View 1 (cartoon, helix red, strand yellow):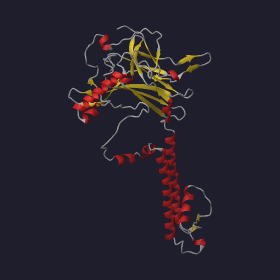
View 2: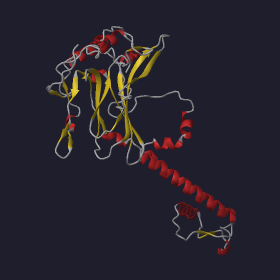
View 3: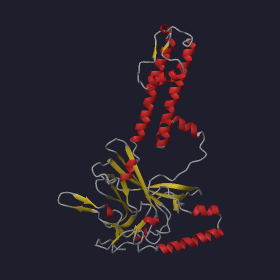
View 4: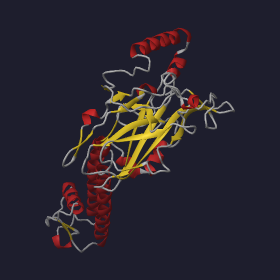
Length: 391
């Protein structure tokens, strides 16, 4: 097959026009309906469920679509890692736990002070100069004294005299406890505030990926961008994985296998400065998991390309990780991303309306790289034999 000749072509958008190389959506839907009808007649519900593809990485949020069960001592393990467990909670639960913790500590030490008043006979002692607690007559007074001590309000009305050493020791313990207790709550709240989850919302990935010729090489391409123009990620680097199912020679089925896809690690192209939208390219060669993929067998494949971007956030100095994935029905063969960067006299203008737009090249390689090189072997460069996945 010939190489790409980069000429101006009609601009297409994936939402409006389909890839002319592939089967149309109506045909795919018809085939899918026939397939599902066949499954419903000849397969059990369990087999039908296994045939359904499930994404490992959710497209919009980047969250991994995994569930866990039968974990021994799960709650005990989570309690041991209580700090991270609390930070991972939703805000409403964190606020509820913090409020409840304050009320419990105030009430708990209020009960301790109230018990000390019984022990020291403050209720029976009529001489104010001999009492251990001044101006505390009942439990509400002890509760207010506990609250004032822990929050260091220091109103001065309810006080502790020097007549009794035991209440003084308890007061010291209460003061030390309140410092550590409030420090932990503040640390948890601050850690949740500075988490990098919301930073992901300003990192955008293209909805679709492309496979096309680039510098005489067939490449898998996708685009990413950072919506914060004046606050970029430091030390940003990208990784790409081919997620598939494998069968070993011993007959073992591994549902989820990650195969690394080189994005230019040796040349340093995996380290990015995401100032403007960038196109990430993976060269398809004999070491690539896409070595045997062609324009004709791509729609029938079952795999997922996982893209991971990591970098440090300038303002808070924490690491952020953003993820997305592409399935075969989201890959356009023979298409290129439309240029969305315009150079002007004083600045560069980025038009994000064209971020997901692609156009089809006039001359493209439709066969796989293995077919072009004359290698018709069905084996992959991996040790395991790659088969269709259940994603």
